Amino acid sequence: MSVYTRPLARLIEHLQKLPGVGPKTAQRLALHLIQRPEAEIAAFAEALLAAKQQVGHCQRCFHLSSEDLCNICRDPKRDAQTICVVADPRDVIALEKTREYKGLYHVLGGLISPMDGIGPEQLTVQALVRRVAQEQTQEVIMAISPSVEGETTTLYVGQLLKPFTRVTRIAFGLPMGGDLEYADEVTLARALEGRRDLT
Image 1 (tube, rainbow, N blue to C red):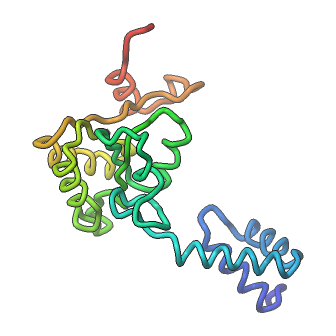
Image 2 (image 1 turned 120 degrees about the vertical axis):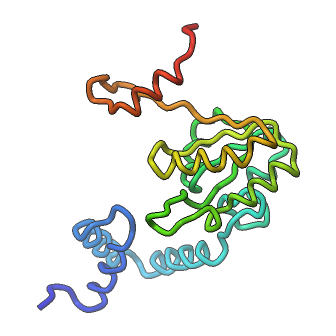
């Protein structure tokens, strides 16, 4: 027998489907939500539904957007000659938070993973190749995580783009405060490859 009434149990069940939300967090969230004023919950539900219905993908870079072109692609101050290729919109957000990158993006929508049945045709790879060729891009920066799938994707996309433009990748290395003895071999190798002169 459940300790929750059916509507509350259903809410907890749905909240648990969110990433990083386990049973206890779902319970806390559900109990918090049902104690809020009804108008606040209605506004929350409306915002959730509106985001789902109105947020799609930019027709140029495939980042999240509620219009044909996202804010980044519409910004005339961005360097249109450089495209940073990422796997997911979350990567765009992370890179934008650094305030270092001033170019445009291209979101692949995932990584090549034959084990999961994801090939290049399920991603926006061909759209990227067409875009680079048409826009005469000067540089494509591959900013893909260094996993097996990430390496596969980076190498595959890089080979397709090399006839059209310069292809680089972000450097990988040790995080601040990281100890060498705890770093894996791939991370150490990438850190050595990405070394630069002291200034």
